[in-house]
Length: 449
Image (cartoon, rainbow, N blue to C red):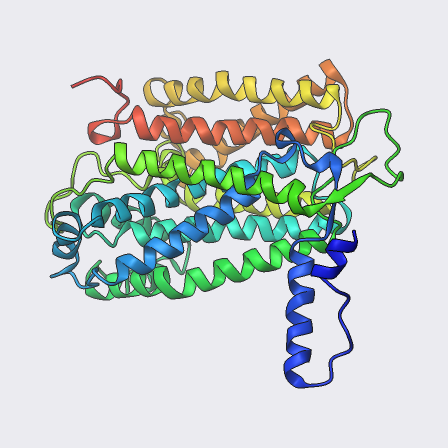
């Protein structure tokens, strides 16, 4: 402890403006990483290091992104050629691009898993309520970063993927056409679109992402650090045993980050990001798919009226996510995976129900269900939107209530079942869009010619 105090002495009262700024910076760093951390938060299985992994990937993205900016030319005439030149003529250019590509895709996955971990350990109660909202916003910003970067290669795949996603905005009532023009910088995707996407991808979004991350980490520190894992017989009011951040947690974070960087490097060497043929606005590929992280949304378009698939259902899901910390709970428990064994059973039941019912829904809607024919007297928004949405939501509610009756459980445990059901359904819809949609977006087997 004496050594620690000698290295990090207590701050003295600032006397000059420069000293005052230094004290503010030191306090900011202390808030980011405390001197001591609870011993129970150290095991990898509690948090899986997902927050640190996300920060590591953001660092890789910033580093490789700056390097790519020296070569890339954001114009329709030169964008594709500059990527080709990067891969063929710049030393290690292809490797840098691959690292950037895999870091971006892994960041979406890691951020999603981090959201799941936070939810299923109950780390959204009390002082952590608003930090959950920040986490949801960070996930949206990460998706925006990937989306804006997707167009930059200006090949056939990226051009038409962005065409599809921006075209979805046209289904927003009243303002859809205006949103499409804002997103594209005009009626069609062209030079203005590329400049806008490049500007957002390289300046606006990185600044927003880093700022939100810093605020997010600071809020974690203000809430007392990572939520402390509890056992059923533990006293939540008891003061936990602590240990020094250096080296106990620092070493674990360093090893985790090193392993993640090694994984990214292996993927970058083994699997090339690839580059398709140059963009051709006059010839759409078949099938024309959105980026993989939006394929769940595109899959909804095949089963619901566009306004419901693009606006209503995603909007309700987002509002539900933001409202989770502010719901009333009989006994808000944090730090325990799934709250209890009952909560674990309910979450597993919800996930298994989605695993069975989601593919069944896709198959029935593809080959059997004809909402517009059966309900021909209703407007399309009702026949293909409201009715199937109510059926889907009613089925979800029935599964959750059935699981609740089978296993019991309080409100938080039942909420976990619904969350597990919807998260699993989203993953399955995304997988269907990635591997099981062929020409004309018809269902097919991945190995079919």
